[in-house]
Image (cartoon, rainbow, N blue to C red; front, side, top):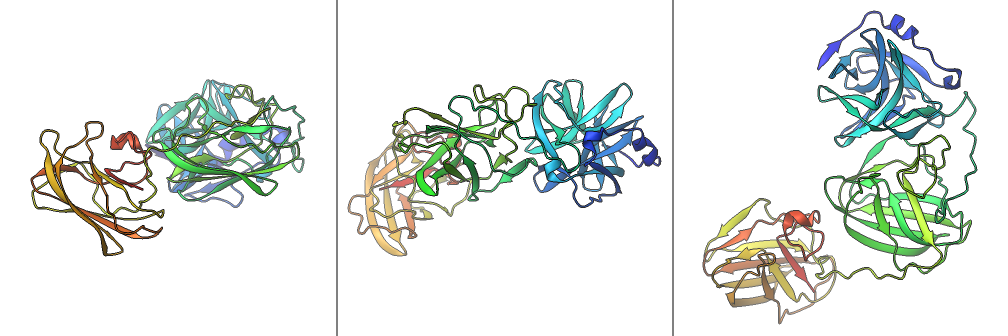
Length: 467
């Protein structure tokens, strides 16, 4: 990573002109990590926000991002760090980010710098779990990252909202067929880390009479599947709730699509809708920006109109009465397992393996499955289960075999003494009579593919218990 501390900063910046439409935007001199009040936060990466900056280098002025004590830019294939720079300051209402690709530059783009022969609009692009401000060069948004200059052909361009004190003129756009929203969301300031258990709420007003059938939100992970609960209310009345598992972003627009089955309540034009999304794992989510933008390039979500939406809501003339598939195994009786992660263990004859977890539901456990055993010979094992420290089941099983589909041994819990209640602490102990193999437990309700237990839902668990 190359570092410079240019002496003629003011002279270099003086050669970069700002259009009158960008009068509300100011570039404020700073150095050594200083960030003035009102700085535009153009992006973020794990652990920090990334304000928009620009700095002089090699006969040019280059937009980039503040990282630690420098303005980092991409140039000549490298990431350059510069200790003296300018920071973009503007009211949030004066800018917006417009999606573009392959060299597209929307009208009103903020020109953050220039180099011989061309201007350099301010852009940003997603990369390595972050959103990084940079400069638009030819067909790409160029950013500095990891000591290198990274070029990305899908990006967003900063656009000035209008002259100082003048908000963008509202644009009346007839909704495409099936689209039923306008947004009341805040201005887009980049992709965010979305913590498990937190809830993101979107409020909007229906533009048509319809039955909602599909919700799309630009959120999720492009690497690991995740789970999320979606709840919908119409005029303050709850009408839909479902726990989705194994969700993945689609690559075309980084949206997660939630099919809305079984919502038989019609939505009327003018109804107020609220959507609440609560992920079960940490994931990413793009802040909502203006949904109706006449200057935006064609949307990658076919049929949903000229918009820079981070979400859409789609409907039809008839309700979708499709039933969600029922899970083959109820995983909800356990969470917070106490065990080691890792690969397979050998469990010696007479040795015991104990697993403790917290019940999420009430009921009588009927079956315990543990990813353990031998794939050649049958074996015998004692299984003991306690609830809140009190013995609830004790049986010695003989002639046990692993099933080939998932290498689990299944123990029927016939005669379990009493029902369990939500919050009960359950422990089970398995003691084989001869040495067997056992998979270490690493249960975190994510990524079933990694657990190789395809029938048991969204978990990496090496065991399950069902009612």
